[in-house]
Figure 1 (cartoon, one colour):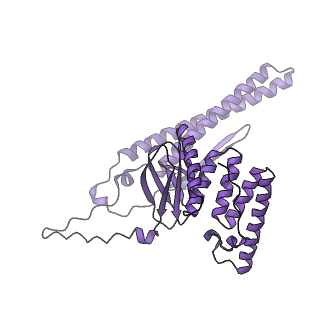
Figure 2 (cartoon, helix red, strand yellow):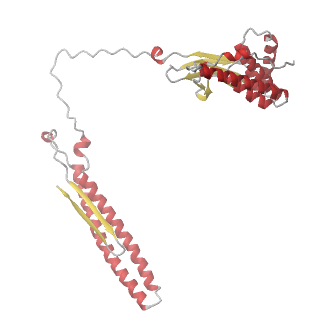
Figure 3 (tube, rainbow, N blue to C red):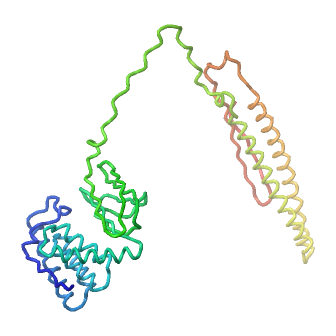
Length: 343
């Protein structure tokens, strides 16, 4: 069965797609009509020259500017020429959707059935999801696949189709896709304010008829009353940091010892030994300080965890916690740690 392209009257371009009709001026509408007519004519020329992919692109551009059933038919014909049966089926179906009383409906329906058979042999079938308004996100069995109007191929059987669009209530349908026939799934979306009214306010529970009022609970949590103090964290952190510095100087001492063993001259050996002694002393001092701080932090931690203030003091205003800070630093030959704060 052979068809030619459908002629498109320029008057068809007087209608502009709603997607572009958000208040354009008459000059803008006229420009779109001219652009659509130009792309249609270029598409016809490309089709006649055998450049069918170029013809498809031009027809699609014209259809985006001014949708037309004749353009849907011509797009389907061009897809047939490049042996793309899925898209030929899609656009023949779109042609009859736009022009349900077309004069050639019987012939186009026969083509549609042939292409549905091609998909059935592959274990697939075509599905089209439509919505008013358009550009709603489409999900098939929970998986996003595109926006409306969307057409794709899925296995026949039961599917869950849902659409969502900002400002509108989500919609969902359960369908059963036949193995031998494509299917349209249309949605008419409702504004969210109309489809999802706010719940009615709930009445307050009645007060107890008798009995004394419950005593106010102590809002201070056990963790807050018996938590680990800031001083404990600072002392433990300073101890660990100082022990780390001691370890670093011990490594530097060993390096200096190796340098002394491998020195080529007596002067180099003497300098290396001096560095080794200095670093050893620093490492020992830092180890002592770090050990003392770590022990002190451990004692404070034990006190924090075991202290439990009496109930008489549970609601007293808490005194400011002591503040303590540790500062320190190291050079290649020395290190220092300084603790300061208020108690």
